[in-house]
View 1 (cartoon, one colour):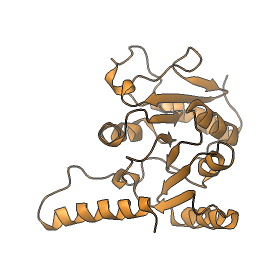
View 2 (cartoon, rainbow, N blue to C red; view 1 turned 120 degrees about the vertical axis):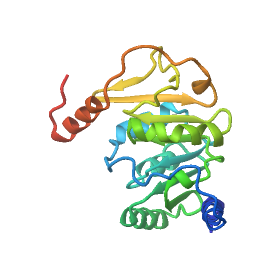
View 3 (cartoon, helix red, strand yellow; view 1 turned 90 degrees about the horizontal axis):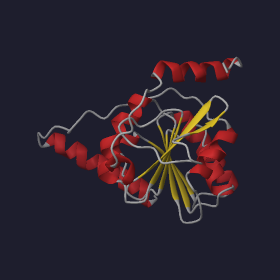
View 4 (cartoon, rainbow, N blue to C red; view 1 turned 135 degrees about the vertical axis):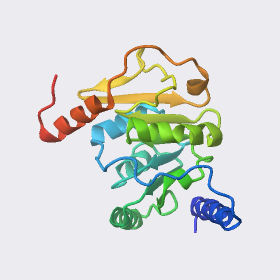
Length: 218
């Protein structure tokens, strides 16, 4: 069993013991916070590029789906390790089979579990494709657990209340109908929130729906 799996089990056990002692959880850990929508491969590569993925990085993909970010991070960006959390059992099994077939067991780990209960302290780069509300639920965890210098790259949905880092002189990177946000710990949540209109979450989901329908609005 890997160190990440041991930490996850240990952390979950501690939380379960706390309820047995009569101490409630600080909050109810959400289950799924986003439907499965695969990120196109060109966006996967851009996310890792924007995040500066490289040989010294430990990448965590929260909601890893079919593992495309994990494999791309290892095979094309040569990161040290890639860890994915996924609730869907069949997806986990399929990704683990692919990991074994490629002989990458020592570099890719897939954990079937709730990433809200994960120990993220070893991550240096985190990738997200959740929702604005899902990202908001993760903010306290990020602020508490992530080490200084950790980067977070979010596809399409911002972390409201955090300042996104500049990407090519802009605060996000637009690729067709897709938008990429970059955050860095602790700068992003210590900076004053940038003022300005926000795209409603329904609008972002509309762009995603149109992507699947092949009718992207300009």
